[in-house]
Image (cartoon, rainbow, N blue to C red; front, side):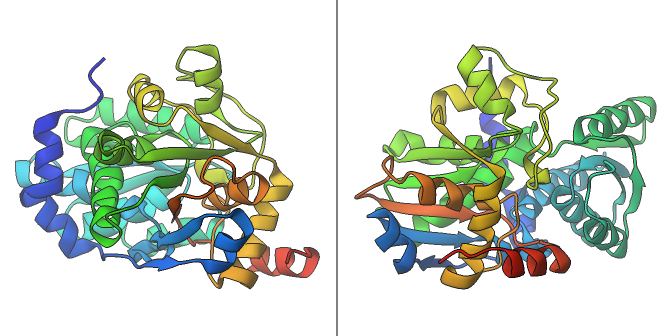
Length: 328
């Protein structure tokens, strides 16, 4: 199947949409992580998307989609489903570009993210117990309303190019001789978009997912896309849910290796990132670090970028992890 539209890719990474996205986002730092490098035997760099506006890479793709709709004049109202970070990105982009936004979240979405979305001017509603249920309701509402457009969190040309393509180009500009990139994987749009830019250059992508909720790894293992999926509970709520046929095809071509990380290691990676690396890392970003702490063999000896995809962690949760964990 067609994995992405080349015309959209050019528009998002180099056209007027790209200009609007750049005005709404920031170039995030890429910094060395010598402590993690010594631990893994690799030259490790951290791409700090936790310092992006809204605290997550998700702003890039959301801004690309909303900007394209605004330029077309077809986006009077957008509807999105989100575990939290995508909703924050949609809300900020919609407010900046004069578009009305509704964000449906699951009952599992953290309350502080819901409040953040509302504070940015979007209407927030709880729809379903899981992300997939919220997404199904968002699609239903958009289909029933001619004035509304559904903005996917991962299965959309503009979103994939904005999230992954623009991020990859920043990494390549900051570290041209990068050899590997480690990326958290949920629906697969971020890793797929990065793959479009870097895999043809011989750069390897290693994915990382929570062991209890890993639709993409299961899809790859069984040779079919899990477009509906009910996994187990995970602290990394932003990585929950199904994949799409498009992102599954991208995984096969660009990131077929996905490490699975148990919940305890996700918790330990958050603490390690805070205490040892000096960064705030949310649970959905932590699998990328946790995977290397558990087994660094895929990137040993290589110049490697770890995408710290977000830093929106509840203060109470961070306090609990820091007081209850002993990670050095």
